[in-house]
Image (cartoon, rainbow, N blue to C red; front, side, top):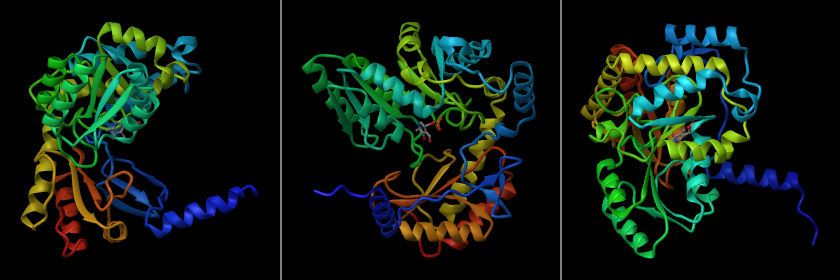
Length: 396
Ligand SMILES: Cc1ncc(COP(=O)(O)O)c(C=O)c1O
C-alpha cells in the first residue's frame, strides 16, 4: 500500500473541520486595562477573558513583577530541582496554601500542566472518578495516568458519584475523584460539599480544580470550597494563577506528604523550566492583594449579577450561579454561534464562541465573562449588545 502524503492528510483534516464549522483561528489582540482590547485596529470591550479581578493591570502587581524582573532577570533558566528554585516560589506557595486553607502548596507551570502531572502521580493503578464535563486538562490527565479505570459520572450528579465510589470501594484499591469547582464553560458550581463527604466516607482522595473558582467564588474569593461552606475541604486543590490572579502558572495545594511526593514525581514540573521571577513576583502580589481586599470579589460578583439579571429580564435563559461571571448563552449550532460572535465584535464587544470539543455536540455557545475591572456602564454595554445581536435566540 502506498504511504499517505502528509500534506494531503492535513488538507483533508482542515477541510473536514471547516465543513463542520470547527476551524479555530488566532486573532492578535492587546489590552492596556483588562476591560478593553485592541484587535483588528479597533478598540472593543472585552467580555471574553478570565482576568476576573482585573489584577493583570493592577499597579501593585506590575510594580512587584518589575522589581523581580530587574533584580532576578527574565528567566529562571532551569527546572527548580536543578538551578531555578527562586525564593519567590516558596513565598508564593505559602500564600497560596493559606488562601485555600491547606497546609502547603507546590507551584506548577500552568493549570494544564498541574492537572496532567498531578493525575499522573496519583492515578497510576487507581480508579479515577471524573465529572463528564471536566476540563480538557483533567481529561488528558486521566488519559495519561495509567489508571486501573476512569469512570465518568453525569455532570454535577453527586448521587451517581457516590454510587460509583461505593462500587469502587467494594472492589478495593485506591480511588480519587476529580472535579472542577466553578465549571469553566457552564458557570455552575460542583456539589462540592456532597462530593467531599462521599470521598471521605469511601476513603477516596478528593481533588478540586479551582481554576475558575479562585478569586471568584465564596464571600472572600477563596474558591468554590469556600462557597460550599468547606474551605480547605479537599485533599488537593489545583489553583491557576493565570485567571483571576492576573498572572501565569498554577499551584497544587495539599498535605506535606503529597507535596513531597510531587517535588520528586510531578514530571510536568521536574522536567520543565521554572516560572520566571517576574511572574512569581506579580502573582505573589496578586494573591496578597486578594487576601487583603475581598471588596474586589464583591465588585466582580455584583457585575456578574447585573449582567445575568439584565439578560434574564430580556428573556435569556442563562445557566449557572447567580454570582458567576461565566455567563453562557447556548445557541446550539456552531455556525450560528460564530456568526453571533462576529456580530458582537462588529458592535464593539468581544466574546468567546465555544464549539465542540470544548462543549458537548449541539451546545455551541457564546461565553461571556465579566470582571471587577468592568464599570456598570461596561456591563450595560455588553448586555445591550447581546440583546441586539442575538435576536430570537434566548439561550438554553
Ligand atoms: C477548569 C480548568 N482547569 C485548568 C485550566 C488550565 O489552566 P491554565 O490556563 O493555567 O493552563 C483551565 C484553563 O482554561 C480550566 O478552565
